[in-house]
Length: 275
Length: 197
Figure 1 (tube, one colour):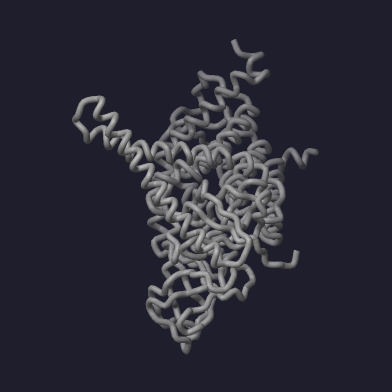
Figure 2 (tube, each protein chain N blue to C red):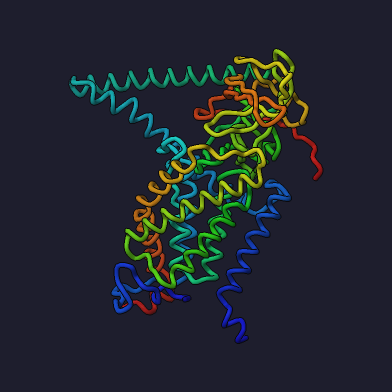
């Protein structure tokens, strides 16, 4: 008893630090999709995120389309109101048209891929600078499960790493933890694409003898089982011969603009890993 | 050690009596956890709209520092691990990383509170700034170890410095918000109401 009182602080600190490390090692070993608690926490935070995103979009819209208009105009109140209303309708129509175009592209893309899929909206982005994840508004109740690939009209987006009943977290291609088996479209050279600093991608394990040039398109190979074959990943933007080994250093500009990711498609196919 | 009143305030001293009564541990723990959840949600939405490239507001570290200086050891550990869990849920693909990092930051604060207190805002800023650098270095280190292909960005020191400054300058605001929520909860806490004048 005296011993515990004397060494209370180091004992408690030691226990909790070991507990945290054990949890980290347990989670890393098992994979994030197997940590069951928390998905309900995501269910709790998801609607709030969605609400805040909605409010933010509304304020953004008001700021861009309404206040700017009101400040610019020096007409009488009636004309201003009419003008604002007309402009707002035009903007709404433009927005609808743009959304229509995006969805049409998405639909064409969907028709090209012969897989069941579900469309989702991005409701939250990763708050840290070192990781690249987003949260979407579709989850397990829509069939969205961990390891499912996610695409959009421009190309591959990432994969699902976590899902609660109505929300899911995606690991984007540009995250350093991400990895996709790919082929260079022109030469059929094969490698693995990973996230690199600055929102770029890096093509790895491409030996010196392989033919790769600036502007080459890089597609998923379908070999690793997560993505279907032939989804566009990006375009080669730099090629350097590595000084430290047999591989070339190839930088890829992603096909998807991850800063403007709004709608995505989750392919309802799942690689069968050892459970 | 279990109560924050024994610590030496940087702006005050040993002899300075606290004029305002500290809220008890439970409202503080609950308030910190609720504030953590709220700031985590804002971190994925509103705060990300104001991000400057890779730099953004990181208010949860402020709560960890606050818990380290103001909460009793065991209860603080539980709150901080919850904050780490929430941070892991919404950020990154390595589950458990923030739990470990927040725990380490919390232990440092628990050690520091023996000699110091964060009653003054310059010290709040200093604590948060220094511990932000530590937390980011630990994150970069852990990712380097767990992801063999990860190469930290070349401008990492500059990014760390900028992020530490952002966190430090916004620290008093989030400390204040947390204290306001804790104070609000304390008003409705049964034990607090019993002893209130």
